[in-house]
Length: 322
Image (cartoon, rainbow, N blue to C red):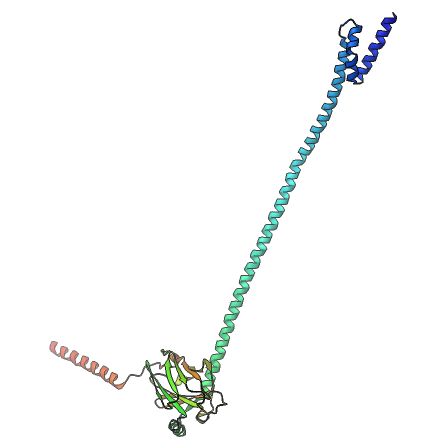
């Protein structure tokens, strides 16, 4: 009876240890239990141990479930993150489009501003050209005089004393020049239907000189002489008050010019106060060309003969048929 009670106490102790999850203790006394019950395994002990392991597995399962739930929670956050990323991408795209539109607008405004500046520059240049043309016309009007006997006498005296250093004749399609002062060299360059450039050269010790340019009536229309450009070294020059001012130029004076209207056309006198090499240019000749070309008498005679001959031949043919 006592032995049975002892065995029962041992069995209960082992069961308590098994339920508390102390596997080592169970394994330690597993053999003793088998010996107590004559080598026969005790099913309740194994069942208790299985239940203890089940509780451990259940705990592990719960932890796994919690981990899965955590993963599911994080997984559920992913669509929100994607949506947030999509919104960010949309905002960046809109900002990029707005920036590009702003740049396009700025480029367009810059092009329009450049075009406007170019137009303003062109208009300003046209205004300057108009102003210069008007100034030139006014200068030509002030420089133009109808030749007098006094002027002709003064010009002849200036040729004699070599104040007029050279005489240049500008005709239809040709230019020729005659040197009066052998110390002064005159050359014609760049002659066209619209302009002629005359280069004048002399030593630096040469005193003031005058160049006389003759334009015959077949070359210019004296009524339009105001459109002519008279330039000295590429610059428009101021008119002289009269011919005497030109013929009595001093080395301290500025170059001047005068236009004399004669029966055969016009004469232009240009003063050269001091020397190295200078270029006198007559420009815009096409603006002062005669509106109706003047033909020589020989040409007119030939045309008249041709017309007369044609009429005579026509009359003879009519007489033959009548």
